[in-house]
Amino acid sequence: MSCARDYLELVRAPAVLTVLGDTLAGGSAAGHSLSGRRIVLPLASACLYAGGMALNDYADRGVDAVERPERPIPSGRISAGRALAAASALTAAGLGLSAVGGGRRSLAVGAPLAAAIWSYDLAAKRHAVPAALTMGVCRALDVLMGAGTAHIRAALPAAAAMGGHTVAVTALSRGEVNGTDTTTASGAVAATALVSASVLAGAPRSWQRALPVVAAVSVYAARCAPAQLEAAREPAARHALEATKRGIRAMVPLQAALAFRHGNAAAGLAVAAVDVLGKVLRARSARGANREMSES
Image (cartoon, rainbow, N blue to C red; front, top):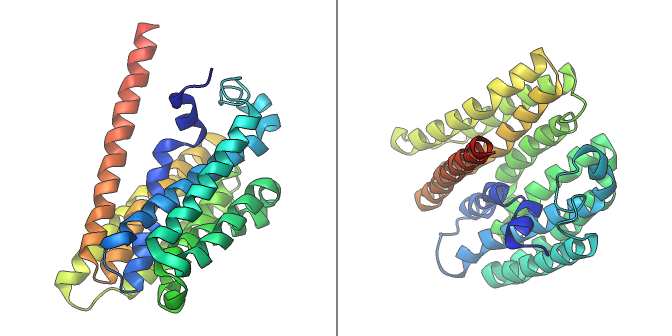
């Protein structure tokens, strides 16, 4: 029988934290405050992301049986049918929450976002360039969902920053098993520099308001650039995997920087709190894994 822990592993529960700030960044760019029904929008992102992860494992069940047999589906802990049902239910929940949190204007972005997620998992991911571009579009649409269709233009720079970073991380992730190449890893380094510069260029002129933007961008760059540089020097699979992990985690301070850039301190601090929570959960998980190894 499948248990809750198996489903949490299926949807990559800790990684869900990395999408909570997308709609906050987009909403900040659109001038929306962090209040009322809009608080629900990060949950919409979380459901859509989790649904995409479940669908990813459903689509990859054959490959995972060879490369990652410990995952929930190939290990037999969750059947393929239940994984597909979970993906469908989470996608429906995400769309419903997008309507609750942002009305028809957010749902109008959430629907193509859901379509892009399913397109990635079922088709685009099989090819390197379409995979990276589609994943970048997914992340950009998630940001725009926070803005709504009435404020798309205002949120485009934030969406481009998150989407660009995601393209680079996705390209690197394809080398997690067999290794990447210097060109891809160097491109990720360049993308980090470009995204950092673009966010800083839009920072407020007042040093009091610019300071949190600079701090968040510094955390973003420091978190992912060193691992990307290491992958560029030695494009082995272990370095590509580490750069991918750090690139995913770096999305959170980037979201905070985008919120601070648009003067939304409440949203920026909320995203920063998510970052701290992620660190705590990873530390607890590592301690638990070490304890299990010592007991065995």
